[in-house]
Image 1 (cartoon, one colour):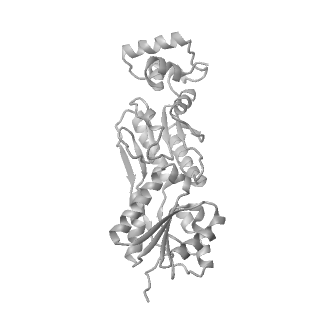
Image 2 (cartoon, rainbow, N blue to C red):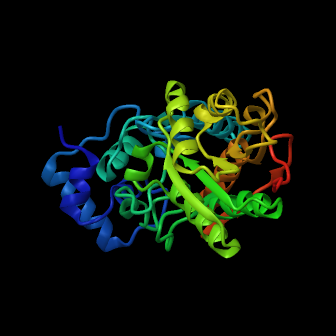
Image 3 (cartoon, rainbow, N blue to C red):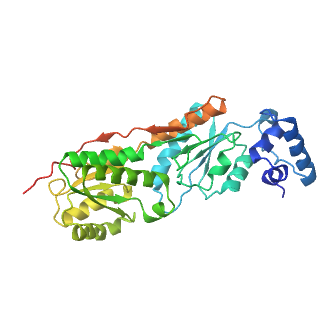
Length: 336
């Protein structure tokens, strides 16, 4: 079956340009319109029945591409998705949730088939292969994440670099000199997922500024691995007095594992985390943490996308400043 991407390839334009040329929703040059119409005739393309809204326009639908890949913490993704849906409804829009891996052409097909007017893209990689498609000026989109080169895109995220710095600054201010980062799952780093690398960069930058001894350990999210990881950290880093945890499923299990090894939190080991607030208050010892603002990120992303759909320029990158809340899991380092 001939699809809109086939027409776009024949006409030498983007799939969304084909959509606009056929629907008349946005101005298209006469030359481009003629190329699109010629490609439609040559290929015998027929839009799917029901793919258009009333009067040939697009329905009020946004797509959220949030692939449920290995290493993704699904509860955090669901918080983000609920926020996107709630905010979109306030703007009289519905949301299509895409949880499969979608390459550049796959996104184009999904958007056209569902009559989607704009796209929200989560789990952004530093060099994400989906980005070239989104740099077309007629492809309204917002990234929840910041790639290595955000030029020509609209991005919103927690300032993860500043979040890593905030955790280290807090621990260094308490006198800790040997600190470990227990980070995201290994596959998240292998994909070069943006948020994980930005946080690690902030952690290492701040640690170097304070002259701390540090180590970074990707964490298997299976809670059963926590005892082995805690044992390895204690064995390999006997001077360790503080950890930063950026791995939600491991937070409470690691605290329990350290305590089983005889390390009291916070008397012997201070713990900080980057996670949702309710998760930070779940362990027996409430954890000093930087809030992971999934709900705010979802709302900001939708607001920015609606702004773009209305033709209003949006900032290239919006970073939410980290908010660190001090709780019982951190204390001043006691020297002998």
